[in-house]
Image (cartoon, rainbow, N blue to C red; front, side, top):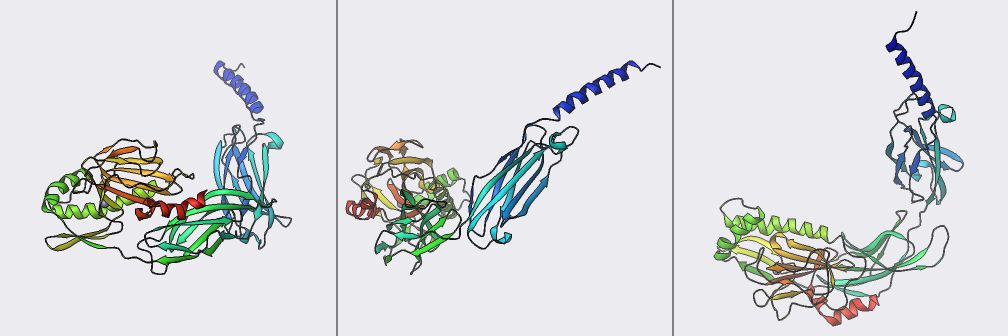
Length: 455
Ligand SMILES: [Zn+2]
């Protein structure tokens, strides 16, 4: 009896495919394990991210083990779907492994090993597949870094700026100054290798600009704080003496012309139009819009340069008269009734209409555009957490990412945003907090408090 033609063709194909398959199925492409080269942790440990790849038959199994005092403790063991006939395991997988020394019976400093293994669906090694093994040294470090302030007693004015210069005895994840709950990061000035060994001790020198925020408590806690690579935290008191000051209470009677002419247009522009009640629209803009603008500014200032871009004192707008000061406590009145409040975040400076506005110091433009209550607004990064803001402009003549030199024209004054008349609103920010610009305009203050630490 002869086999029909279609069936014989099928068999021929099956034999050929199986032959090809079995050759393919002994593939030698090993899995790859991407992991940190080294773990530096304390007893709380950390979650380690792994990325596995297998471009041949796909991933089959993965495991993680820690060797502790000669014993292997399993942290993770995973199998992935695939088939011994066809392979077809996943080509890439991301995994997380928690390595927590205190859960592994470790209570002291020491060195341990994290062993990672991954296999694939190849028929090699008697059908166990290609196997990749790597070992990652773990250093358990329980010693917090030591922090030393280079400065003696420092006077900090409420709303004013201050400088901390300090050294930390090892590399850090982060360090800086904290004032109550507010954190001001430090920026690396220099690194000196003091000893070398497994822990790579360095004397790292940092500078941090901070402020005693206008709203801080009466007896704020000011500390230097550092977290090492293992997560150990040190805190030391920063020697500071507070200089109190009171900010002026200012009553602002909202002019009818401002409410009737400015507010409806601004409310429409900002998409904050609750009703025909323009006073309500003013309140929405002065409170909700202001809050949204401040959130956006806080986000923008996180991307500061770690290098200093400015030098010397900042400049005040040319030929300008001060019409409002920093941290004035404003209450807005309408028909004799207090309807809204705000703290003034900078100085109002007035000259002629459309007056030229210069960069107060050198830096890089990080925002140039419409910013709600601030109208056409510019934000310039001077590095190390220091920014200046220019608001209500009629024109902007620079773009984002552009480097500007001190004294170069960046725009023209105007009355865009929440402004009644043509003026410049000017603010200085230190790590996201508005500070009194007056100190930064004063060459003696900048020289005595800043320059001498940056030489
Ligand atoms: Zn202002």
